[in-house]
Length: 633
Image: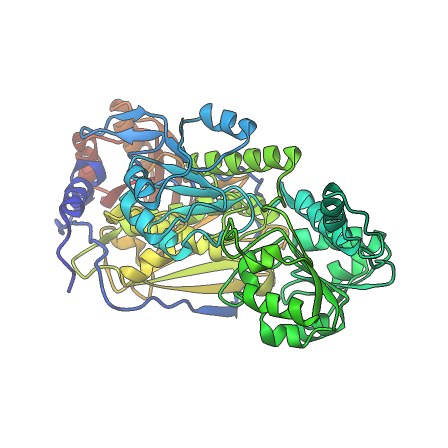
């Protein structure tokens, strides 16, 4: 049984059932849009692989991804609607809670209203956030579930000016439909350089001997260092920073090994680095440099047990996250001589207590989280995060998004027109649903010449889900929370990939959306198995509708769409075209598909304007027209 719709849903239902989305059936059948109802049924994702006959390939060109994250009623970003539906422009508000480079601030100020409020308490942040569309933080601000709840749905994007995002509650961000982006590249070199600086200064006791001389002492024999040439450096975490440290350490004549369960072996070999197990890395290294993120799996991973397995006299460098080290255990390892020296830029609590035994230890070199603190890196991070936040507010998907389907930039570019297609076929299919049973099961079928393992459909599935849920829900839906919202609604989404014999140059031949166990406002959209079936493909970079139920059509998915089922006879295009022309409704595309000559046919008409009720009535009164429906794109 369908749940009772909310007031917003009821209003939308009324609008969609009236002139804004009306349909006509000669047999006087009722036509009401069914709403997606809440259910306890979990969603299921099922991938199938089968083979289909050859389908001719279509041409497509890469376009920019736009409007991927926009919602129907985004009342708080750059487009808003008043109670009468009038669109007005307004600048978004961007809260910057920690210091950001001027170049980044200038970019943000050219786009929106920027509120630079530093050193906010958690209570102050929660009080401010409901007035903000975006939030930019560094490592000091904790963006907790309380912050997302206090935002009341207005917060659209959180930007982390840096790499680590352990200070942002990603689960809460996803549930509330908030995109989280970071700036992973701009401070890479600065962090790597600082790691090497700590490595070399620790090996030669630079900090200690400097302090000694400034205290009036000359202790040459006390501060004898160790050489780096021929020593083994273990890099724990072979990402961007770790690999740059490796390159520089190789230049110092060190033997470099690394541990990272996700690092590709070929990339490590290209630098001359051997990937080894965690145990082998920590037990054979003379120096260990940490470059891993702070996660539940890495929290205090360097502890008493870990230090006990290390070579006596090992030296430790950390420019990653303080929480990966049990600091009390490190003090014990230093006192026992297992760890000869440590050089630390990060700490579990920042700033650390003034009486910290670790900070005060004579064999420890410390710096106040300076890894990214170069003028060049600060400006680069500011620009990178500002561009990502502005892009997200403009509806673009950033390649640095950390809680959306992670798709490499080159794949994003290739999938761009298919992203638009996926959302539109989902949006079309759901507008054909009627009856009170609600939508529970959707299948998305991809036809492609590529090997299934080389086709990442997560982004496309999210956009189909967005297209299906958004028009019939009072929930704000975007790419970030599409799958989560589907699960909450009890919508089961399965996927099927059909391999076709065509050119693998293009990632997807076609995308088909099937909605099962529902009634249709347009009976001709039902396939032989009784499912609503809509299929489209990309032609010359533009999404096209290519099949409605069993009928083949070819119409560009731009503007709005009229579907007519008619008796296949001469003059039908002219009759319907004249009715639209007399009402000043401009026709952009028109296509007719039929199953058998002289029987039934489907006419798909792309229109720029929405026909009024009288115009739609005239179309329905054409004797050969059996049913028609107007659909909004």
